[in-house]
Length: 178
Image (tube, rainbow, N blue to C red; front, side, top):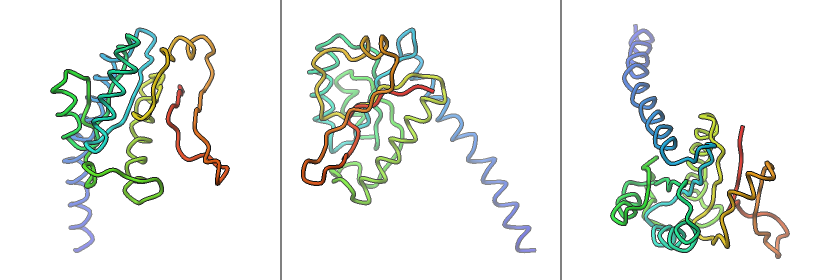
């Protein structure tokens, strides 16, 4: 009897929750469709409230300065997108995180959780057949990377090295396609 009740509850949950998840995914893909260029290249930059000032700076100094329009900021926590939207900067609220208002440091649990959200976001865009150029918001483009990436058709991983440890920390810029 108890197992049957659990199964019914699980089935109910699947039918109740899945349409919402599917709808959110469709919405993200539809927003990507409006932001990507004709070749389906899109620059994605994940941000949260703690890094919204860097996101604005990245927009002003790198995207707007180089006339790059095929970008989308992806918000972790609703407040990040509210801040960017007030400045008419394209942002899609993707996921909540309990530490969205706090800066995260490399290898901390909340950093790892946010990076997993980033991975989900990139994989979702790739699955929808977009070419993704992912960038952190604490970098600067000296020119538009899009034409170089389109010409070479290579997978780019640009990452600073930690000289003391001799290993890669994170990926500030990533270009990938499926």
